[in-house]
Image 1 (cartoon, rainbow, N blue to C red):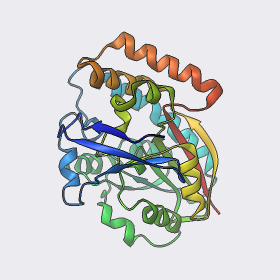
Image 2: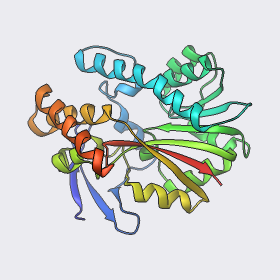
Image 3: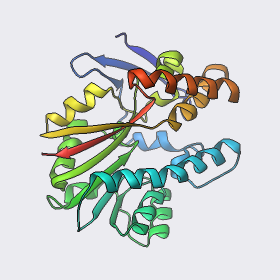
Length: 280
């Protein structure tokens, strides 16, 4: 596959290269911002996952879908994690809605969130101290029955090192839940450089099903199930229309999302996928 040049539409307006790794079947964003500079690319009022704002119809729709999906995600976690101790860590927990839902299901929760504002909101919602990224290295081995990363893995530097940390902190036969965009989906192929889920440089990695399987197998973990996130096709297509044309065309965006989901019935290449991964 060819390399791509993609613009940061959210913050800087800078252009970045997506360099294709054939062995892993994934793209890498280059140049990757330094760890000191990376947080500046998240400083935008439009970065919805770090706020609870509902300023317009689009943000209201986002939060409605997020609320609906919380129970769906919790059902998936409960189905694939059979445990009495019910220890769960949500990495990149944002404003804490998933953790609050997990508490309602009687899970013992912990959260990591790098953004200070989101961390404060999450702490107020859950009544627990939400930790910064550095806490990951301090967690004792085999501490959690389940670890969740809902659209977070694509953001982390030092990818393979990070995956090794996940393997270390999850219990034997524990479960990791990873949700990431899929650049092999129809909407990605349609919008190409304008595809909103590339979201450079916040997204440092761009995964296919093969890349997730290979990366986790390297660390003695196995993908046991892949599930679709069908709402993402609509959300991403709406944003992609805005990137492509300068305005958010609801009709075109929803149509493209529908087509993407329809084609994925046969191809299984949905706009976003949830990977359920067991620690062997």
